[in-house]
Length: 169
Image (cartoon, rainbow, N blue to C red):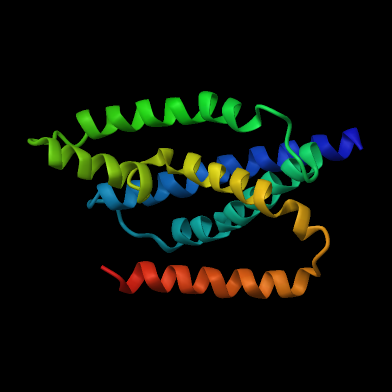
C-alpha cells in the first residue's frame, strides 16, 4: 500500500505542474500579443488538460484514504489556519497592489473577484476547501451509493451550475 500511495503523490505532483503549465501558456498568450498562436503549443496545452480532473480525483482519493468517513477533531480549524488565513492575506495584497483601487467599494469588488470568482491564481484554495466540505458532508453517504447515479447527478449539477454562471448576470 505504501508504494501505491507513493505513486499517487507523484501523480498529484505531475498534475499540479501540468496545471501550472496550462495557466502559464494561457497567460503568455493573453499578455503577449506579438506571439503567434501556434498550433503545436495549443495542442500541448490541450494535452495537459488531463491534469485538472486528475488532481480532483487524487485529492479526494487521499482525503478518503486518510480520513475515510470522519475527519479528525480539529481538522477544519487546522485547515482554516494553514490555508484560510494565508489565502485571505494574499488576496488582500493582490486586491491592494495589483488592481490599485481608488475607493473602498472598488477595493471590495476587486477583493471579491479575486477571492471568489477566480480572479487570481489563489482560487484553487477555494476549490480545496470545497473538497473538504463535500468530503465531510457526503463521504458517509457516498460509500453506500452506487457510482453511476452519483456521476449522472454530478454531471447534471455541474451543467446547471455552469449554465447559471454563463447566463446569469
